[in-house]
Image (cartoon, rainbow, N blue to C red; front, side, top):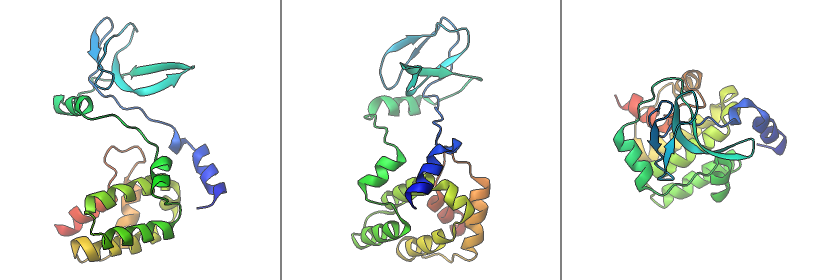
Length: 194
């Protein structure tokens, strides 16, 4: 991917940050406990709010966002936010850590991790980040992913991946960039295993 296509991608709506609720919605004059900052926050707004990731609005730091409906987060998920250290790296930052900026770099990285006998979950997580980062390109042309997943299959799954190219095209047609569950490798394994 060249610098011009990266600039074009970054200028598109796909890179607008979509904040998710990290807690349940609360009404005006009610309190919510923020699972990352561990602060009690009062809703002084006329609409419902929920805890969210740190973001800026007009230069001010915000830890909440408006809710349009009663968002229900399980207490287990809230506990995970409170128990684990919070780290939010962009896709670009994650890929630069692994020096992955082309399809060839990605395939070589996968082959190295296979040779190092790394678990599928580790390899899959980085692939999903890479796919999400290059989402607009893959929506238009995802044929390179067939080769990539055949490499993974030969190490981890040993499945008959017939019509994988059609499966991947269909996956992109049914997948939204902002979907919480964005896991092509996991979906391939689940659907071909059954």
